[in-house]
Image (cartoon, protein in one colour):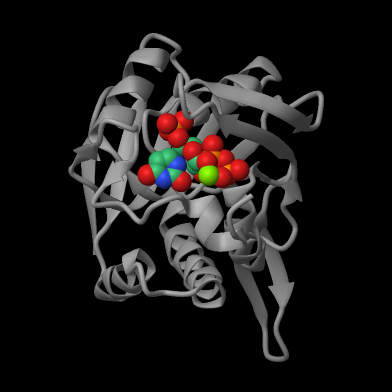
Amino acid sequence: MSDSLHVENVMETLVVDHPLVAHKLTTLRDVRTDSPTFRRLADELVTLLAYEATRDVRVVDVTVETPVAEAKGVRLARPYPLVVPILRAGLGMLEGMTRLLPTAEVGFLGMIRNESTLQAETYATRLPDDLSGRQCYVVDPMLATGGTLAAAIQFLFDRGAQDVTALCLLAAPEGLAYMDRAFAGSGKPIRVVTAALDERLNENGYIVPGLGDAGDRLYGVV
Ligand SMILES: O=P(O)(O)OC[C@H]1O[C@H](OP(=O)(O)OP(=O)(O)O)[C@H](O)[C@@H]1O
Ligand SMILES: O=c1cc[nH]c(=O)[nH]1
Ligand SMILES: [Mg+2]
Protein backbone atom coordinates (compact mmCIF):
# COMPACT_ATOMS: atom_id res chain seq x y z
CA MET A 1 0.00 0.00 0.00
CA SER A 2 2.79 2.42 0.86
CA ASP A 3 6.13 3.00 -0.72
CA SER A 4 8.73 4.07 1.81
CA LEU A 5 11.57 6.11 0.36
CA HIS A 6 14.46 6.49 2.76
CA VAL A 7 16.05 9.92 2.36
CA GLU A 8 18.49 10.16 5.30
CA ASN A 9 18.90 8.58 8.67
CA VAL A 10 16.88 11.17 10.64
CA MET A 11 14.35 11.90 7.91
CA GLU A 12 11.99 9.41 6.37
CA THR A 13 9.60 10.15 3.53
CA LEU A 14 6.52 8.07 2.92
CA VAL A 15 4.58 8.53 -0.31
CA VAL A 16 1.15 7.00 0.27
CA ASP A 17 0.54 4.95 -2.85
CA HIS A 18 -3.18 4.17 -2.92
CA PRO A 19 -5.71 4.49 -5.77
CA LEU A 20 -8.18 6.49 -3.64
CA VAL A 21 -5.46 8.95 -2.68
CA ALA A 22 -4.41 9.29 -6.33
CA HIS A 23 -8.04 9.73 -7.43
CA LYS A 24 -8.79 12.49 -4.92
CA LEU A 25 -5.45 14.20 -5.54
CA THR A 26 -6.09 14.33 -9.28
CA THR A 27 -9.36 16.22 -8.76
CA LEU A 28 -7.66 18.46 -6.20
CA ARG A 29 -5.02 19.43 -8.75
CA ASP A 30 -7.57 20.21 -11.47
CA VAL A 31 -7.79 23.96 -12.01
CA ARG A 32 -11.57 23.63 -12.53
CA THR A 33 -12.13 22.31 -8.98
CA ASP A 34 -13.91 24.96 -6.92
CA SER A 35 -13.11 25.93 -3.31
CA PRO A 36 -15.88 23.91 -1.61
CA THR A 37 -14.79 20.75 -3.47
CA PHE A 38 -11.12 21.54 -2.84
CA ARG A 39 -11.80 21.85 0.90
CA ARG A 40 -13.72 18.58 1.00
CA LEU A 41 -11.01 16.70 -0.90
CA ALA A 42 -8.21 18.11 1.28
CA ASP A 43 -10.17 16.97 4.33
CA GLU A 44 -10.67 13.46 2.92
CA LEU A 45 -7.04 13.18 1.83
CA VAL A 46 -5.61 14.11 5.21
CA THR A 47 -7.66 11.39 6.88
CA LEU A 48 -6.18 8.84 4.47
CA LEU A 49 -2.65 10.17 5.08
CA ALA A 50 -3.24 10.27 8.83
CA TYR A 51 -3.89 6.54 8.88
CA GLU A 52 -0.31 5.96 7.69
CA ALA A 53 1.22 8.90 9.56
CA THR A 54 -0.01 7.66 12.94
CA ARG A 55 1.31 4.13 12.50
CA ASP A 56 3.90 4.79 15.25
CA VAL A 57 1.64 6.75 17.59
CA ARG A 58 2.41 5.73 21.16
CA VAL A 59 -0.10 3.52 22.95
CA VAL A 60 -0.26 1.78 26.32
CA ASP A 61 -1.64 -1.65 27.08
CA VAL A 62 -5.05 -1.72 28.76
CA THR A 63 -7.64 -4.31 29.64
CA VAL A 64 -11.39 -3.78 29.17
CA GLU A 65 -14.41 -5.86 30.01
CA THR A 66 -16.49 -6.83 26.99
CA PRO A 67 -20.03 -8.09 27.68
CA VAL A 68 -18.48 -11.56 27.45
CA ALA A 69 -14.95 -11.53 28.87
CA GLU A 70 -11.82 -9.54 29.55
CA ALA A 71 -10.03 -8.24 26.44
CA LYS A 72 -6.52 -6.89 26.18
CA GLY A 73 -6.08 -3.82 24.00
CA VAL A 74 -4.40 -0.43 23.81
CA ARG A 75 -5.20 3.24 24.38
CA LEU A 76 -3.33 6.32 23.22
CA ALA A 77 -0.51 7.12 25.64
CA ARG A 78 -0.24 10.44 27.47
CA PRO A 79 0.83 13.10 26.81
CA TYR A 80 -1.57 13.05 23.90
CA PRO A 81 -0.23 13.93 20.44
CA LEU A 82 -0.06 17.54 19.35
CA VAL A 83 -1.42 18.51 15.93
CA VAL A 84 0.02 21.73 14.50
CA PRO A 85 -1.56 23.26 11.39
CA ILE A 86 0.57 25.89 9.65
CA LEU A 87 -1.79 28.76 8.87
CA ARG A 88 -3.37 29.48 6.60
CA ALA A 89 -3.46 26.49 4.25
CA GLY A 90 -2.77 23.96 7.02
CA LEU A 91 -6.14 24.80 8.56
CA GLY A 92 -7.71 22.94 5.65
CA MET A 93 -6.15 19.75 7.02
CA LEU A 94 -6.92 20.18 10.72
CA GLU A 95 -10.38 18.71 10.96
CA GLY A 96 -9.50 15.60 8.98
CA MET A 97 -6.63 15.03 11.38
CA THR A 98 -8.53 15.56 14.63
CA ARG A 99 -11.34 13.33 13.36
CA LEU A 100 -8.85 10.47 13.58
CA LEU A 101 -7.11 11.76 16.74
CA PRO A 102 -9.95 13.36 18.74
CA THR A 103 -7.96 13.57 21.98
CA ALA A 104 -5.01 15.32 20.34
CA GLU A 105 -4.23 18.84 21.44
CA VAL A 106 -3.83 21.53 18.79
CA GLY A 107 -1.13 24.19 18.53
CA PHE A 108 -0.96 26.86 15.84
CA LEU A 109 1.79 28.39 13.74
CA GLY A 110 1.03 31.28 11.41
CA MET A 111 3.64 31.42 8.68
CA ILE A 112 3.78 32.99 5.26
CA ARG A 113 6.36 32.59 2.57
CA ASN A 114 7.66 35.91 1.23
CA GLU A 115 7.02 35.38 -2.48
CA SER A 116 10.03 37.57 -3.48
CA THR A 117 12.66 35.94 -1.26
CA LEU A 118 10.88 32.58 -0.75
CA GLN A 119 11.81 32.88 2.94
CA ALA A 120 9.24 31.86 5.57
CA GLU A 121 8.07 34.58 7.96
CA THR A 122 6.29 33.75 11.23
CA TYR A 123 3.34 35.94 12.28
CA ALA A 124 1.76 33.80 15.01
CA THR A 125 2.81 31.08 17.46
CA ARG A 126 0.43 29.41 19.90
CA LEU A 127 2.11 26.24 21.11
CA PRO A 128 2.48 24.56 24.51
CA ASP A 129 5.73 25.78 26.16
CA ASP A 130 6.93 22.29 26.96
CA LEU A 131 6.72 19.64 24.28
CA SER A 132 9.05 17.12 25.92
CA GLY A 133 7.91 13.62 25.18
CA ARG A 134 5.21 14.81 22.78
CA GLN A 135 4.64 13.31 19.38
CA CYS A 136 3.85 16.18 17.03
CA TYR A 137 1.97 16.09 13.73
CA VAL A 138 2.45 19.17 11.55
CA VAL A 139 -0.10 19.65 8.77
CA ASP A 140 0.50 21.84 5.72
CA PRO A 141 -0.60 20.91 2.20
CA MET A 142 2.56 22.12 0.42
CA LEU A 143 6.23 21.32 0.99
CA ALA A 144 7.89 23.42 -1.72
CA THR A 145 11.35 24.87 -0.88
CA GLY A 146 10.97 23.34 2.60
CA GLY A 147 11.73 26.65 4.35
CA THR A 148 8.32 26.87 6.04
CA LEU A 149 8.22 23.29 7.29
CA ALA A 150 11.84 23.38 8.48
CA ALA A 151 11.16 26.56 10.50
CA ALA A 152 7.99 25.03 11.95
CA ILE A 153 9.79 21.86 13.00
CA GLN A 154 12.59 23.90 14.56
CA PHE A 155 9.97 25.69 16.74
CA LEU A 156 8.80 22.28 17.98
CA PHE A 157 12.29 20.93 18.62
CA ASP A 158 13.20 24.15 20.48
CA ARG A 159 10.34 23.38 22.88
CA GLY A 160 11.47 19.81 23.46
CA ALA A 161 9.48 17.79 20.91
CA GLN A 162 11.07 14.40 20.38
CA ASP A 163 9.72 13.34 17.08
CA VAL A 164 7.78 15.14 14.42
CA THR A 165 5.68 13.82 11.56
CA ALA A 166 4.63 16.21 8.80
CA LEU A 167 1.59 15.50 6.63
CA CYS A 168 1.65 17.23 3.24
CA LEU A 169 -0.55 16.78 0.22
CA LEU A 170 2.35 17.49 -2.14
CA ALA A 171 6.13 17.57 -1.70
CA ALA A 172 8.88 18.75 -4.04
CA PRO A 173 12.25 16.96 -4.20
CA GLU A 174 14.02 20.27 -3.53
CA GLY A 175 12.06 20.72 -0.30
CA LEU A 176 12.83 17.23 0.95
CA ALA A 177 16.52 17.74 0.19
CA TYR A 178 16.46 21.05 2.07
CA MET A 179 14.84 19.42 5.10
CA ASP A 180 17.37 16.64 4.97
CA ARG A 181 20.25 19.12 5.07
CA ALA A 182 18.60 21.33 7.70
CA PHE A 183 18.18 18.50 10.20
CA ALA A 184 21.17 16.29 9.35
CA GLY A 185 22.87 15.50 12.63
CA SER A 186 19.92 16.68 14.77
CA GLY A 187 19.43 13.05 15.83
CA LYS A 188 15.66 13.61 16.10
CA PRO A 189 13.41 11.59 13.85
CA ILE A 190 11.32 13.44 11.26
CA ARG A 191 8.82 11.76 9.00
CA VAL A 192 7.16 13.34 5.99
CA VAL A 193 3.98 11.64 4.81
CA THR A 194 2.71 12.90 1.48
CA ALA A 195 0.15 12.00 -1.15
CA ALA A 196 2.66 12.61 -3.96
CA LEU A 197 6.25 13.56 -4.64
CA ASP A 198 6.07 15.95 -7.59
CA GLU A 199 8.69 16.70 -10.26
CA ARG A 200 10.28 19.99 -9.24
CA LEU A 201 9.86 23.66 -8.36
CA ASN A 202 9.43 26.29 -11.04
CA GLU A 203 11.26 29.65 -11.13
CA ASN A 204 8.67 31.13 -8.73
CA GLY A 205 9.11 28.37 -6.17
CA TYR A 206 5.82 26.68 -7.08
CA ILE A 207 5.50 22.91 -7.18
CA VAL A 208 5.25 21.45 -10.70
CA PRO A 209 2.77 20.09 -11.67
CA GLY A 210 1.44 20.92 -8.20
CA LEU A 211 -1.98 22.40 -7.59
CA GLY A 212 -1.25 26.13 -7.48
CA ASP A 213 -1.53 28.17 -4.28
CA ALA A 214 -3.14 25.88 -1.73
CA GLY A 215 -4.22 28.73 0.59
CA ASP A 216 -5.88 30.62 -2.24
CA ARG A 217 -7.62 27.52 -3.52
CA LEU A 218 -8.94 26.69 -0.04
CA TYR A 219 -9.93 30.17 1.07
CA GLY A 220 -9.76 32.54 -1.88
CA VAL A 221 -7.19 35.14 -2.86
CA VAL A 222 -6.31 37.67 -0.12
O1 LIG B 1 8.06 25.09 1.29
P1 LIG B 1 7.89 26.57 1.14
O2 LIG B 1 8.63 27.10 -0.07
O3 LIG B 1 8.25 27.31 2.39
O4 LIG B 1 6.38 26.87 0.78
C1 LIG B 1 5.32 26.18 1.36
C2 LIG B 1 4.42 27.10 2.12
O5 LIG B 1 3.72 27.98 1.23
C3 LIG B 1 2.31 27.86 1.45
O6 LIG B 1 1.87 28.77 2.41
P2 LIG B 1 1.81 30.35 2.09
O7 LIG B 1 3.12 30.99 2.44
O8 LIG B 1 1.32 30.55 0.70
O9 LIG B 1 0.76 30.87 3.15
P3 LIG B 1 -0.83 30.63 3.19
O10 LIG B 1 -1.02 29.30 3.81
O11 LIG B 1 -1.33 31.74 4.04
O12 LIG B 1 -1.36 30.68 1.79
C4 LIG B 1 2.17 26.46 1.96
O13 LIG B 1 0.93 26.23 2.61
C5 LIG B 1 3.37 26.30 2.85
O14 LIG B 1 3.17 26.80 4.16
O1 LIG C 1 3.22 25.24 -5.18
C1 LIG C 1 3.13 25.89 -4.13
C2 LIG C 1 4.26 26.36 -3.43
C3 LIG C 1 4.08 27.05 -2.27
N1 LIG C 1 2.82 27.27 -1.80
C4 LIG C 1 1.73 26.83 -2.46
O2 LIG C 1 0.60 27.05 -2.01
N2 LIG C 1 1.91 26.16 -3.63
MG1 LIG D 1 -0.48 30.59 0.04
